[in-house]
Image 1 (tube, helix red, strand yellow):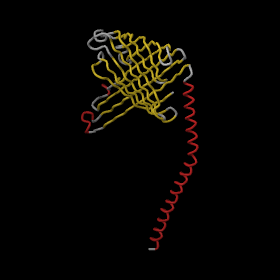
Image 2: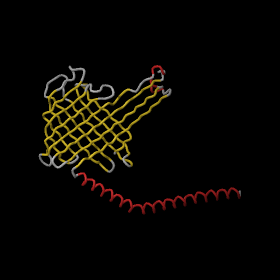
Image 3: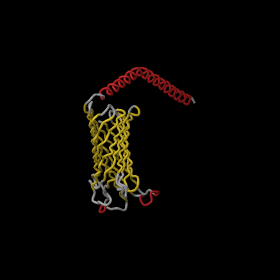
Image 4: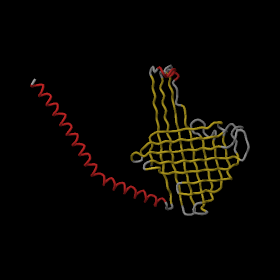
Amino acid sequence: MKQVFTLLFLTMTFFVSQGQTLEELKKQKADLEAKAAPIQAQADAIKAEISGLNGKISSFPGWYKGAFGTLGANFLGRNQWFAAGDLKDSRATTLMGSFNAFANQIESKYFWRNAGSLNLGWQKLKKGTETSANEPKFEPIADVFNVTSLFGYNISSKLAASALGEYRTSIIRKFNDPGYLDLGVGVTYTPMKNMIFVFHPLNYNFVFAEDKTKFSPSLGCKIVGDYNTEISKGINWRTNLAGFFSYKNASPSLHNGTWTNWLGFNLFNGIGVGVEFALRYSEQEVAKTQNYYTVGLSYKL
């Protein structure tokens, strides 16, 4: 009986000592957090000051360049998974990536804005019934290449006479089939530094394709809107809407439009999570709204 009481006493002593140790650790943590608070506040103030200086620096004339990219991968496997039906034994691999870059020259009398984007994706689905003789290959599921160049001569602080060139195509499966080249002139309105609106009522949409009956060039109006901002600390958003309205009546319609959004969550030193999403409508391609999205790790230069 004495041994039982001794064991109970030692057990209670152990838990009490553990509780005391935990309280001590919590107190040490609170003390360190209290010491770190003024240092963190000072660091935040310095970062805010740096951000303000960057804003002032960016208002000066000169070249401004940048690039960012997103990589995404998805691997899925099943082995005798009944609920999957015919795909109960299957392997699926998806690889996607996007890259965006810009180089803008901003001067007091004129500007020259250049941008390029590339979004590629492949997918391979292997069923359990397939053998090495008929091994499936990676098939493209995203294939977009786009470059734009906008030159403007300032009429006022916010309005400029401008000329735009834009080229859009695929590069994996059907390069330049179709390919779209827009060349036009008009005006560009810049209500704020990170927002522009392009209105070009005189624009010719060149279309390159083997099927000349379906894909036809025409004269029309080109409209572009572009906006980028930091929604909150570490969260950046850019949106671009580009549309062409043809002056030529045709069936299918020769109008087309693309709305693309980029969202970046910065986690550490430019590394984070990136999302790219786009909607497109073009009856020359398909009489339905198209879309694609990419989610993955991102890096901003």
